[in-house]
Each structure stands twice: as C-alpha cells, then as structure tokens.
Length: 214
Ligand code: AMP
Image (tube, rainbow, N blue to C red; front, side, top):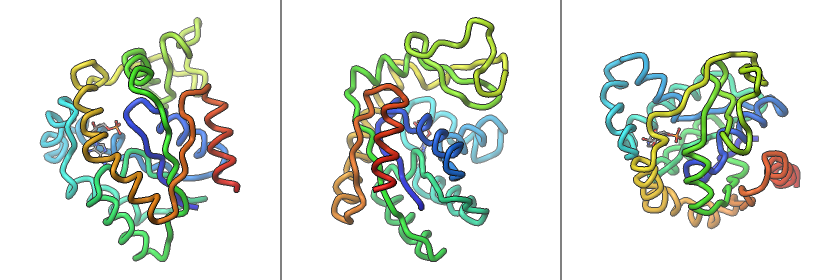
C-alpha cells in the first residue's frame, strides 16, 4: 500500500509516518529530510536549496522530483509513505507517472486537518532527537527528565532552523497557495481521506489506521 500524508507544516505528518514505518514495515520518503541531508552535506544541490528552505519557500519541482525518482529505485518494503511530497500539482502529476512506471498505485491520501493556531504553537515548541528524529514538544511531549530519547536513548536534541515564526508564515502561505489544491486533485481521483490531526498522537494514529484498513 502506497500513501501520501498531506497537511500543513506541524500537522504531524512526520510523527505519523514514523509510526507507520514501525508498525507496518512501510518506508517513509520525506523530501524535507532528504533536502536537509543534502544541505547539511554541503553538496552543490544542498547549497542551492539552503536559503530557500531557511526562508520557508518551496524548492523547485525539478529538484524534489529528482530526489524522489532516485529513492524509488530502492526497496519499497511494505509500501511507501510520501511525507511532504507532493507539494505542488506538478509534483503530484510526476508522482503518478513514476508510480505507474513501477507498476505501482497510490492507494490513499490522508490529509491531516489542523488549525493554524495549533500549528504555530506546535512548531515553535518542536524539537527532535539528533540521532533518530523522534519528535518532542516542550508542552505536550517534553524530552524525558533523564535527557534520553525514548526511542533510541540519544542525548542530543535539535530544533529546526526554519521552525521560527517568520519562516512558518511563509511555509503556511506556500501550503495554502501551492499544496492545498492537491486536496481537490486527490478527492477527484477518489483517493482523499481527511483525518482530524488535532488529537493526541495515538488518537490520530487510530484514525489513520481505520482509514487504511477500511
Ligand atoms: P518539511 O520538512 O517537509 O517541512 O520541509 C522543509 C522544507 O524543505 C520546506 O519548507 C521546503 O523549503 C523544502 N521542501 C520539502 N519538501 C518539498 C517539496 N515536496 N517541494 C518543495 N520544497 C520542499
């Protein structure tokens, strides 16, 4: 089963994708993670996208489609979870074509619905484990008192440079301008489901599971 998790920044896409990876042996393809890796490696492409990402703008379609094309050459395990991709209609068309070339289908697009206020407070309180990427939140899911990641025991945590109010404003604007039209696109294809993303992680997880298993 191949799925997209769609939603604005801070909706919980990465958190829910990680759960599906653990529980269903699926493979998470996060273009945000791929781009951060490229940026941190200092590659030519990484240098090109660093400023765009810091501002909260979208990286060009060519670059992200290229990254996804590259990853689709590997193992697809128990299915793929596209997290943060596609973000434009051009990317959505490209994904459809790439999956078709592989003889694969897109089975479900899960939109995580949240309101903007929740997003701002989630994002500005967010940190992740530097080793495994486990997500924490200063108020709702703080880093354990012993300073060790619940998932891997790592002791270093980081905040994303673009998790600040200024970039978030642009990221949200990009979402509404460029990405939200995908809701109608996938609705028309009969693949869209909306899940309330405002609940606790376990509640959202259960809602997603019931969509995927129905
Ligand atoms: P994310 O981790 O998904 O929030 O992505 C972080 C940043 O990477 C975004 O604000 C964009 O600058 C860039 N990015 C990630 N995925 C895409 C995509 N599919 N298309 C364009 N830019 C992207």
